[in-house]
Image (cartoon, rainbow, N blue to C red; front, side):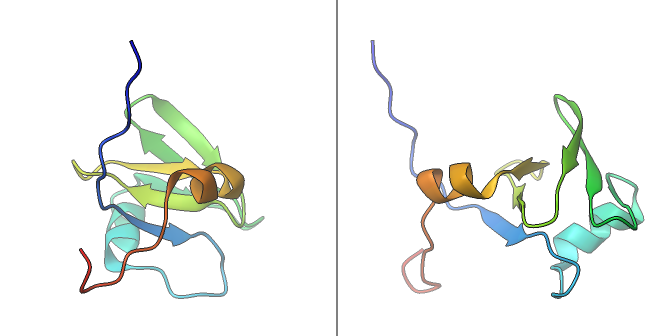
Length: 87
């Protein structure tokens, strides 16, 4: 059988040290779910274990409040931006 991913609206941010990061990201830094390193990487405690995120990766806030990194090429193939009115 074949399956299609259900359309779900998620929040995400491109991880760069030169932009402001949303409250949900900083909340997870405060509780050590996300650990930022001086070299521009971060480690994220996910449901599958700790994952490393590189500068420029997307950090996704999932539908159940979970966070996980996603490489830009995969993110752009999987997600498209929605307008606030079109949600």
